[in-house]
Length: 306
Ligand code: ATP
Image 1 (spheres, rainbow, N blue to C red):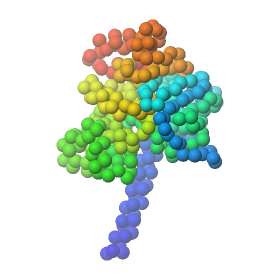
Image 2: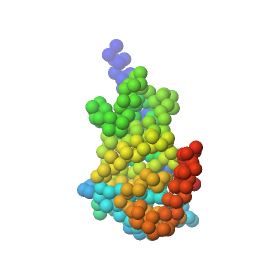
Image 3: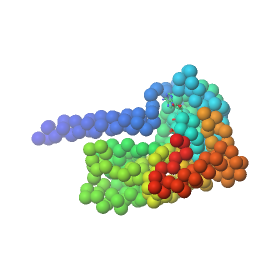
Image 4: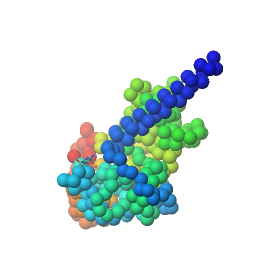
């Protein structure tokens, strides 16, 4: 009996490992569009994070040789502050987050975290330092507990519950018949967009990264859920270096810095009020969005980048 149990147990471990790897790959491909291997440099060191200042210095980038996507992109996210990027669809916003993860190498310029060039640090340490709350969270076909713990595989149940509470999803989980053991994902309980984002927030809280990327969903949640999520994000962005890829200007009005990207170039930068006062592209986007809001109570999507 024991003899039979050990191999079965072992098979269980292997099954879980494979499933985890597939889920990892699925997550990577779906959310981050990764396609090319970037290797660690032979001299690569672990990233040493102090304040987590992020700096893009004169970055040029193309996915393919023929078409340049970013042109001389130059900005600093001061340690512990929030920078939001806005711009039309295809202007290059998500590309910035892919470059920060170093899914691609840039053609010229440099990207540094606390002065360390991303090309000189190990990718594992880089990815440990960055958490992302993506536009559309993919849940693994597993329990809700597993889905939260994914942020930190060795997390204790207490840590998981604390993260779920902080992401305001604990009460919802407790109300499910199987609680934290409820199966979710494609073959389990389907969660709403807001609930899925809360799982992603809990996951990120557990990971506790120094740098946070929040890729705002293009389609708005209903406005109450949206406001609640925004309030939570503000809390977790507190004291973290945060890059928000924004689709709705109303959510980023208090960012320390807003960058307006247009065809891969930063055309304006400043705070919400500075940009409104400047009366340029941002001010026009803001006006358009306000106007849309007024006559869009019936269809609350209101993106800026369509
Ligand atoms: P959206 O608001 O629609 O998400 P975005 O501003 O985030 O758009 P990016 O996803 O950064 O835009 O894309 C910028 C440009 O790079 C687009 O023209 C896009 O077609 C191109 N692009 C994105 N990913 C790839 C890729 N893997 N290979 C080639 N080109 C790509």
